[in-house]
Length: 359
Length: 247
Image (cartoon, rainbow over all chains, first blue to last red; front, side):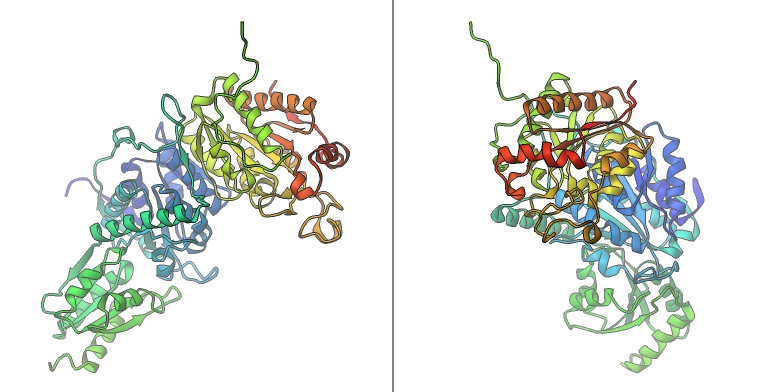
């Protein structure tokens, strides 16, 4: 195929961001995502309208992004788990102020400093908002290099369309892996539709305020409901899944990101032994693809949630199923990456335990 | 023939101030609005209000305003200014905002030489939350969290933030003024003007620290609070040009 580039995952996100018209990046070094700020420093330096700032802290970085977003730029920051915890105040403000921005979390093992190995320990933090207050934020979970590029582009579009922060939830493995990627054509930021709310000086128009302080409880309640209505629209419009070998499946594995890639390998091996297993991969983690999972429960009575943690997304799967099917779990936390063989074994033992071969 | 000698500045809204009687914020707001008008920069000004009493500054300034989380003003202003370098960007911050929770953001914005203007209102206490100890509370000063007065051994001494900022290479102009007398108010306006001119000339980071009375939390009459700035506050925070590299 034409224009195929072999690139490291972190750099794919960077290149895709630049091509999406991102002209502001602020970040703070933390492993395993340093290749992304390093890439952005060079890429922004090569643009006449690009800004890269190595911030003094994660908190400063997200606030610089808030400022750049207020000024109308497509802006991005990135970090890894402990750094994302520090950014949560700013993410809450982005949601409250209804500002678009991209936050990349290349997850590592935790809690605390944890380690620098790939993990999916931040699912709750990413999908539950993470910061204070009654808000949601869009969470996209790429599973391969091409999707890192596609979802980064899409993330910027969602952020602008819904005026809300978008998290790209990757992990250390995806950040490091080199894969061939085809990038979309670059967007020149001046061609993007104008944002009628930006702060760029009140010349020839009334002055504007972007704020989240709403002391009047009635007004604050209305603001909360306004946000909730927006979140309902998002939940209606963008949930996305990918399925693999689910047509005749009696057992479906639900996994996202790196865990979903490994699940594919495990499913392939299990299929070779005659087990009817498939994969449902949520691409959007918030909004969670409840409808797709519920629809699948008409045919499938057993689901196995596979996560690189002790069980977080499983809660959303249970909520989506509302007791219609059995939900099982296989997880490896702490930065351990399960092998396809091990997943195949977990599938097989569950398959026999649930007597799925017989029915 | 009638001549208008006094009116509401162009970049002040008609909203009445909510500030307590004797508070310095409303004077400082007015001075800033006058300066924005006199320098002809109101239509390209973008302000960043703080958390604290002056959070509602966006209700008073008739310029674009974008709220910052507590202490993050200089980082947020950095983002705005880097995207729109030909606009005039200012951050308005209290002493708790700038000298405690936002110390890092302030010092590093200054050190990078961000071409922004910071108005630092120092009233030696956390006003909006009810008069707790601020990093700038004087030794011996009563606050709701320093029973018996601020004690150096227990609470640490007041911090000289402006002097610290002046040590950074990117800081171009730092001055400490006060708004407790007509003379000091007039001088404060000159300092604010100069700080914005530094930004207009693209020289780098400018900051005016303004000692401001808080009669409510100091538990003084407005007149006594103004006297206290002369007799007490300026003993710890002397009025002076702390750094001037505009020449």
